[in-house]
Length: 364
Image 1 (cartoon, helix red, strand yellow):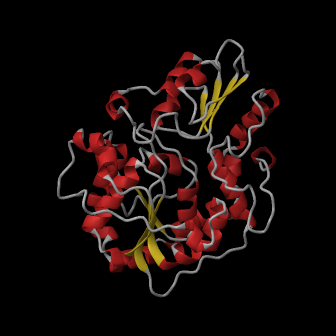
Image 2 (tube, helix red, strand yellow; image 1 turned 180 degrees about the horizontal axis):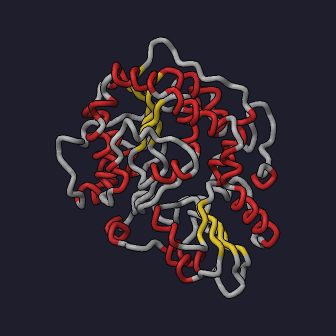
């Protein structure tokens, strides 16, 4: 059996379990768990599940050191489990190499919203904005989140649901066609620098951040949060369980002095997204409030930009985890652990400059 277990999102439960025996010393979970993001075909099963399989394995094998990018506060009690945001570190390294300086336009939209591929938080948020927001004040790039049927069980089980919040007839339509924007074959980093920064972040005050989240109660922080900070603006987080705590522990400021984050501790998956938007609607809908808050919070905005793009803070924060990861590489017998296995989207493994993206282990 493997000394290093590598649990991938597209593997089955059986493929996960069979990687463990008395010889297993390390386990890497660098993407979300192996459950469909909306729990298909049995969302009710996962809504009732107390302990996901990955966390059952953490409990069953206390002598195995786990490096995981999927987190919630309850994992703090397990000494063998360590937060390790490999995707965040990967893109952070490239941001540090870029000499870019965000510059806000004189005329700004209130908010920006980015979402691709179906997720519970994106589908719910897209429908809420379509029904409750002035879309002239929202810059968004969106796809595959236009049908409430895929989150029907989430809505049905919610004690917070109100038909005033959303309707199936109003949603954000797909509007992001990579091919038309000449970024069809680019990676996330180039997409940020060449398109999202000048066309989205520089033209808006507040980023509504919907990190990739599944049906489990957890958070996994990667480029969506990182880019909102690199965009040098305010950021508000919704739809991702306890993401505020995880961001703060690794050194970012979440503007808790501005926003009500009560929703991020809700176990109601509907409220986790919609309560956040409802509770903060008076802020995110007011341009004057947002402009004033942007001006009053420049120190926090600059701090987040520096952590995301300039300083060595994140590398230093994950120094011990990086050492463990390099130890894993020495014992890994399942083939190379490359950027694909770290759950990082990368269409052609090259930047627009033609440079080949290096292996993650060479960057830490």
